[in-house]
Length: 478
Image (cartoon, rainbow, N blue to C red; front, side, top):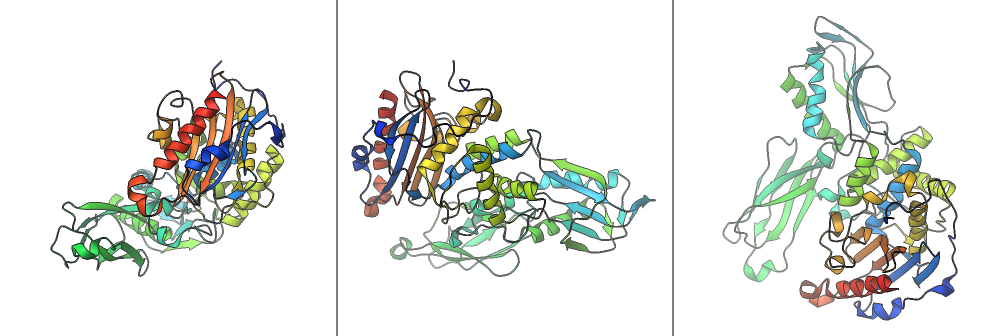
């Protein structure tokens, strides 16, 4: 029987969540000597077939989970949302259509779809003239009430906020709330680096960054600061570059971005508006005119886990709270909701853990390897219902494990399936594998504070690769 199918077909909870630690067999402490001095390590592994704990090292210590946090989000989503769940973006009205004119307001309702593209949004707006609407006599009411308060979680690093992977997970979300521009630094020293921004983006990007002299280039860095609504200013310096290079930026005001795109789209499809575009604070009901649906939950979760998609994770994180409480969701409400769900439905014990977001971007997150192992056990015990194994990256094959050299050779390649988690100084894994006897192992690796200091450029991953290869080979042989 395959690794992915040997599970009980019904929900099973609270099975040996607190195993005896006396059975630990693998000496993780000795293997950890290959890691750089100052590194913090927590590790735990359990044989799911024999219910034996085979390794335990500081498993109760709180660590930064980074993107392994998405394992919690995936499980909670499966517990609450139906398999056919999709994000809806909809056009509605309480008015009437007469002779090409909508007499009344048009409601544009966003639900936080993290995969909605500008092209799909244009197709939605194009449904207006196809339904005979060429003129809107009333206002356009922008409904983003599914979420409220900040669209960024506490603890997101400030100088990452203008970078695409830290884009706000907002109700109105187009193109992952990201845009791209090319920078040209192929100029004489001291010259201003120029920016080529596609005209399709309703943002402003200017540059005062300059090409640095060779003596200064090693200490240069580029920075992006905000100077108004979706107005970006690139500062700093950079060594001369022979070719233009692209940068991705996070949209800072997604609602303003969506309004600007909407205005362009209305003009493009030939629809005029008498009134104004207004953001509303309470949901207004109306007759459905047209809608766009995202891909279903299973597809979204697979993208989230394989590609470590932060937008999908944090949109689902807040959507869970909205569905459970029927109110606009904040990050704190989502945190409380996720903890309660996983505890009440899965028996997972969080203790004093801190859950700040669903993606793992926040530096405020604190969780133990033991708690993450409990989560993996619930997934394993209920795989025939959850179908989550297929979402994990496979070592040497796909997702964020496709190029992890420590796991890219047999017997680990195509054997280890795990969610990765990486921030500055953080290298985490949480997943499953089989040992040489074909028994299923669940494991959690939390590595924080990893640094090779002055040798960072040359030896950054060498100690990590050695540690991981030795550790997982030992688990395989266990």
